[in-house]
Image 1 (cartoon, rainbow, N blue to C red):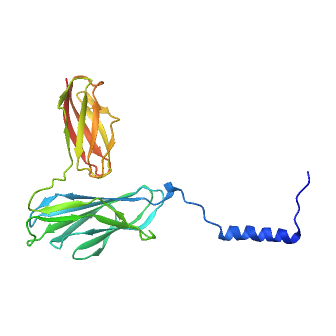
Image 2 (cartoon, rainbow, N blue to C red):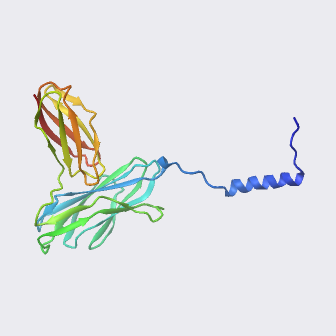
Image 3 (cartoon, rainbow, N blue to C red):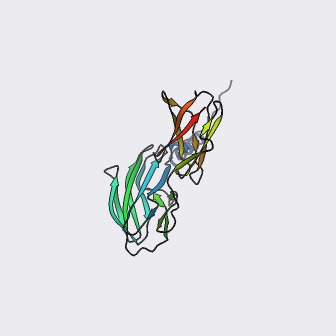
Length: 256
C-alpha cells in the first residue's frame, strides 16, 4: 500500500492549523450535571401577625449542581412597617451584607455542589402597620459570574390583621377508616412548591417502611394514595416528611 506524502510547504501549513486549533479551539462543553443549579425557598412563621408581633422569614438555598458557586446571596424585600430584631444562621460564613428600609441581602458565601444554607430573619411589626396589610414577597438569588441571571424563590404572604391565609402545612384524608385492602388518599397543602415528600407508617408493632412518595405542585399541594393490602387491622398513622422544609405531619387512620 502506498503512503501519502506531503510537500514540505504543505506539512508546515498542517502544523500551523493544528496549533491554531489547539490555541483557539472551542473549550469542552460543560456537562449539565456539572453546572451550578441554585434553588431558593422562603418560609414565613406565622403567616398572620398583629402590631408588635415578631415574625420570622426563613431562607433556604441549595446548590443542586456539582459545580461550586461563589458569593451566593439572596435579597428579601419587606414592608417599611417591619423592623429587623435578630437573625439566626446555620453557618459562620453567612451574614447580612446589605440592609435598607425595605430590603436586605443575606450573603451565604461559597456553596459547593450539594451544599445548602439556611438563614432566619426575625422582624417586629411596627405600631403604625394598618389592619389588613398584606406583605407578599419572595427572595431573589445571585452568585458570582452568573451572567446576570437570577434565581427566584416561591412567594409568601404576611397578613397583618384581617383574614389569615393559613399557609401552615396540613393534610386531610378521604377515609379515616378503611377495610383491609382498600386505599386511603392523603391530600397535603402548603408545603414548598415542587417539594419531594417521603413517608413512613407508625404501626401498632413498630415503624414500617413506605415507598409512597410524591412531589408537590407549584402551589405546594399534592396527594398520596396508600394501599392497605399488607396492613393488619388496627390503628396506624402515616408520617409525611417534607424534604426541603423538614416539616412532618402525622395523620392517623384505621384499617378494619
